[in-house]
Amino acid sequence: MASSENDDLREVRKEADTYEDEISLIDYFLVLWKRKWFIFLASVLPALVVGPAIFLWPRDYKVTYIYDVREDVGSWNLNKKNYDVMLSRFYSEENLSKLIDKFQKNKLAKYAEQLNKDSDQSENIVKFEAIPPFLNLSKLNVTDPNQLDKIRDMQTLLLKVTITGRPAEDIYNASSVIRDNIENVMPLYMVQEQLATLIREYNNNLADIEHDKFSLELALKNNNGILAGLKNVNIGAADSNRTNVTLQFDIGSQMEYLPLNYQMQAAESKRVKLEESIKSNEEKYKYYKDLLELNNRIATELSSKMSSGYSAEQLKLFLAGLVAGYEKPQLKDYLSSYIKKIENRMSASKPITERPKIYPIAKGTVKKSGIVFVVSLMTAVFAAFLLEGLKKRPAQVS
Image 1 (cartoon, rainbow, N blue to C red):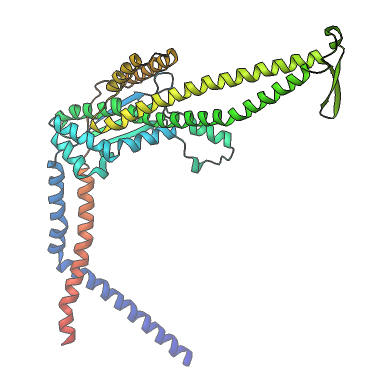
Image 2 (image 1 turned 180 degrees about the vertical axis):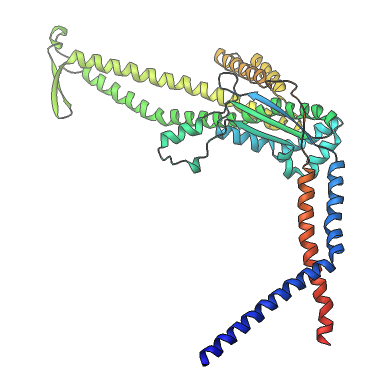
């Protein structure tokens, strides 16, 4: 009997809960219906404002230049390290300032203003892309040092440069400013990096020669002493008998007996080799010292002129002027080779297509208007319930 009453009680409570849920849902729909015009206007009006605004807003355009940067075409040498260096140099504050000045001089104030106002977004104006892209070592399961070095030295084949801006009639003029920077200024930054590497290398070479100098001179001194001692062996004997004299020498764990004249020949030969090594090192020292001084002059020229719009053509003229100032043929040959590398880099710094097509960038009016509508609708619904709750609170309190 008691069990039957409990079951009835549970059934009544269940029906009451269902009835309350139905009342709650009806209340929600009543609130939405009551505030329908508020929700409608609050959702539609923002979308109607944003949509035409986006549609009427000036359209951006883009143009893409592709450079052939294969190793056998030019001296770009765009491995992962050099590519990262190029990007860091291009987006540096110093280089962006050069671009701003060039834009202003070419009456492209909008581009100058955009870069000056938001330099952190400079990648939205000029974007670089390596084709094929470099491998991400952090995602590769490679631990062998030799394989890692090979991956780091891999070079890209094409360099894609996308320039974005407006209006369309100015984008080619703006592209010419950016292209001039990429083709004539960026190589100089790479030259600076190479010069720094060469200067360190020549300093190390000079240090190695200075380190070996004492050892070679000491070895020559000891060898000359041995040679003098050998010549004094059995000095009273006749020359015909001197060839019969043998000396004992320890060679590892064995003992060898060699004729005296052979030992003298060996000592003479060693003396000649040591003297030639010392002479060769002296010549190398002078050569590396001259190269160090020459590369320091080039580095000083670049560091003093780079901030003033220095170009690869001006560097080439500077190097040509240095050739006349040196008399040593090896330095003239070095400078001539350097000039040819600069010329090769300049000739290779041309895009595959000189005047590619300009493409308009989609504004995404429908998509953006839809997003605004959905966000506004959710906000309006929330505001409707909030207003209804605030309206009922005073009545409940009273």
